Length: 73
Image (cartoon, rainbow, N blue to C red; front, side, top):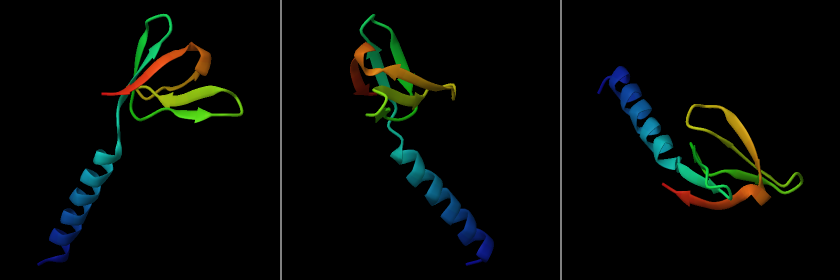
């Protein structure tokens, strides 16, 4: 096999592995608003905020007291 073929195969396998790691979620706020995230929101215990990236790529911070549920899509 050629080196070019192996490089392309490795790149494709790596991309598929990373794509499988993402777990989009829907965060429902207490006011009924639903926010889609690209990955599971992280929680910062020091500040009390969930931090995540929306589907459009914008970073967001939401107070934990405003969150009703967080579910995988």
